[in-house]
Length: 341
Image (tube, rainbow, N blue to C red; front, side, top):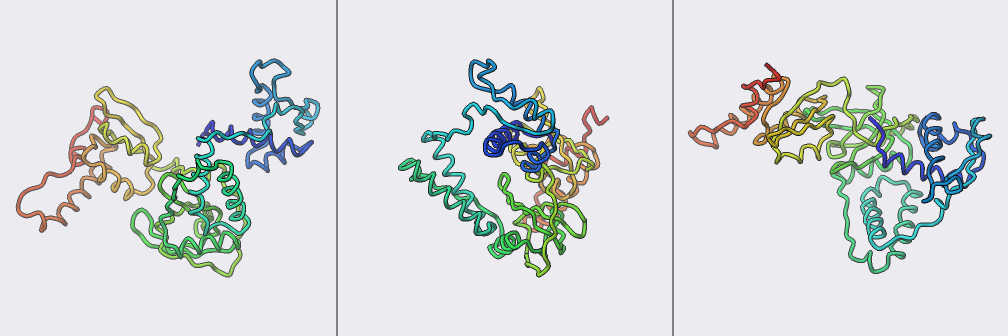
């Protein structure tokens, strides 16, 4: 997944602060510090080298020692004041207080040292914000059982292995032995990123789908997180499905990861999705059934329409003798667009 510009900006600002405190750091060590490749560090330095304050003359730019750089060592010689303490305005202070208070929901998953850092940062920002922070009331919901959150937090803090009882998107329950790596929150969901011993690979588990979590006596093996671990990225080899939706279904783009979006002349739009679990796609399309206009490839549309018919049949005794029209996905299954023909 391509790196977002905002993520790169945060890293480069952090790099300036880091180099201000550490002189003559090898490129490889900077890369290890920020979890990127040495090539990315050199690209970041090249960008910073032509960055500065208004005027943009040589004396206005962030500068590095060229001789050291040629030998694979990064030495910052001019930071242009980037490391000076920032003065927060009321809006920035309130936003920061809101973010820190939201993080408090993840407290059960934090070790004592990180929890203390969170408390200290929140107290300092609240003190600086004064009365502006008094009206901030934010709660980040971690949709998981309290005992599951506590077990995950303990395993992360103590670096111990976990036994999970997990229900996947196909409603199949299984047990997974994993080495926990990180707890993240994205959009409306919280996820445990862990190394699955069965798959011998990094996996992401939705916290609200973990039925039970048991901390094992075995220590967790250290694993390196993938660079994009915090961002959900579907398997690129998964089936590509294209869905055409009415304009009222914009919430789909905001709720699920899409590969591409195309606006159409009639006000509808198309999204491309990588589908690993067909049950997940069926659930999504049934939610948006009234707004679905077409689905490709045709076999996916047929499967969704069959699921809709089965659901209606299950409710038939409650609906009475009157026939009920199938959802719009049924039309998508029986009609091919010009592109499918």
